[in-house]
Amino acid sequence: MGKKCVGVDVGGTTVKIGLFEESGELLRKWEIPTRSENHGAAILGDIAASIREELEKEGVELSDVRGVGIGVPGPVTADGHVPRCVNLGWGSCYPGQELSVMLDGIPVKCANDANAAALGEMWQGGGKGYKDIVMITLGTGVGGGVVIDEKIIAGKHGLGGEIGHIHVREGETERCNCGGMGCLEQTASATGIAREARKFMAGSARPSVLREFGDNVTAKDVLDAAKAGDRIALEVMDIVCHYLGVALAAIAQIADPEIFVIGGGVSKAGPYLTDMIQEHYEKSLTLSDYRPVIGLAKLGNDAGIYGSARLVLD
Amino acid sequence: MGKKCVGVDVGGTTVKIGLFEESGELLRKWEIPTRSENHGAAILGDIAASIREELEKEGVELSDVRGVGIGVPGPVTADGHVPRCVNLGWGSCYPGQELSVMLDGIPVKCANDANAAALGEMWQGGGKGYKDIVMITLGTGVGGGVVIDEKIIAGKHGLGGEIGHIHVREGETERCNCGGMGCLEQTASATGIAREARKFMAGSARPSVLREFGDNVTAKDVLDAAKAGDRIALEVMDIVCHYLGVALAAIAQIADPEIFVIGGGVSKAGPYLTDMIQEHYEKSLTLSDYRPVIGLAKLGNDAGIYGSARLVLD
Image 1 (tube, rainbow over the protein chains, first blue to last red):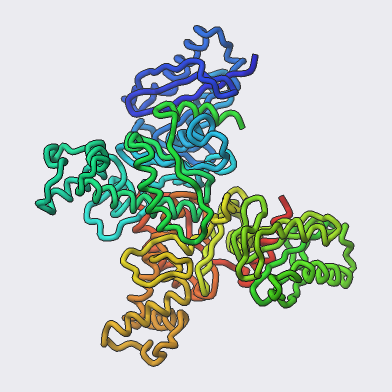
Image 2 (cartoon, chains in turn blue, green):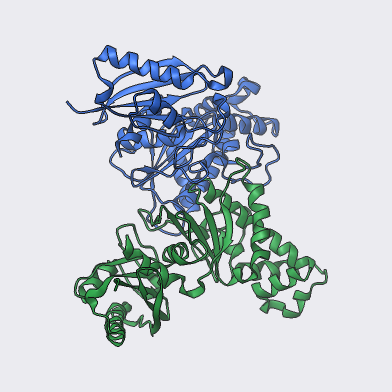
């Protein structure tokens, strides 16, 4: 019997945990609540207790576990340092080291959750078979992860793969959550797509099926309307995909992966979305006819546990 | 006596070659002409013959050479493939393998010249002491190289570090050499800075010391005038450094190196230039207070031979 590994994906409200074979087979997954009160002091202890409990149910000894990977929602440097994790209430810490102590010293590695998700997609998802992938998650925000030669580029300051905050848009007048203006996230996240649709509707009297949604319009409404040929929705998606294309071209000309994998709620629009992105991406990358391809993520919300588990297999 | 290594930097008119100690000490450097006629068929043979000749003068046997690195002016993939090298007349080839055969089978590694220069600056130049650096060369064009964990990110299509062609400027109306519009190189190269100055002078009647240079104004003229307080020159450099800041911030949020090293002719303006870039860079990277620092290159035109030699020390 091969060894097992455990992947932990710590979110603001829920911690997802998965038990895997080293081969990548998911044996069991479960969730526990994230207790972020009291500066998140209980989180790692809860995770350790939960892992012990579930391993016992499975009849797996801790000594049969090669290691645990843990993805956290904030910057993590290449050596596993978390300078601060606002969502969990943590100050400067080394969660991997702390969790290892709680688990009889088995190896524990820590990464940013979006970076871990990218590694997960490389291992068993949309990037399977590739060693160099960049994942872009289009959700409430825009996240990303850069994996080169099967390793996460976490960066020296934990900024590796923070592609939602690449400045792409000149003339933006509103501020991004990060304090900047013109970040990719402001236009290409689900929130950003809806904002863009509201701006278009406010700025013109042209008819659109989107008007029935008013200020509650969502990114899904925009994508559905665009697929159905609504002109306003198509113009919104043209802007969104222009900036996504610019960002992907920039990433290609810095890290040049084999494939871009698009995930997150917005990516449910499927090849319709990636085809639109592809068109703008090619316009922004004219240096060479050889360039990374664009594909779709496959693991959904499980990408984080897959990637965290994969962290310990190096 | 330790082993030696040889670094070769193939330019469009001259091939620079250096003999190094493994410790990084440059023992001897020389040049031969680049014979690019006949699809550059003679180039590798000339290099092999020249290396043999100079080693003999130094009393070094080929068996005392750990390997040869060769930097070429075009895309090189991570496995040493050159899809095409317009400047040398080469089609698809593996220059490392070919040169190795000509040198009794000693290891030869091949990289893009700008990527090699970045590795050279990491080894013995402005990035010495760091393992993760990104070099930006502001010369006739804008070149770059990304080095993470002491290794070049060459990319799967040879696009790694092609930061001169990151799209940064909306509304650009002229085409870049690559076919795109709004590339960093169009604004921040020596050529781009001069072009910007000409546009400013044509678009206003305001006085400027730059007017005496007319259409022959150079990037050096602009930087000298800016240092002396000339308003037009300062506005030109403000635009140039804005787009450099945007590009550096994008790179920081993708690859997050420890340091940016600025080289090339334009970088002779020294800390005056890097301070101006720093100001705009911080405005474009508000996500974190921890970010890569900006420094200057130190090896000048020798960065390529240093980096090519360093290629064989892994």
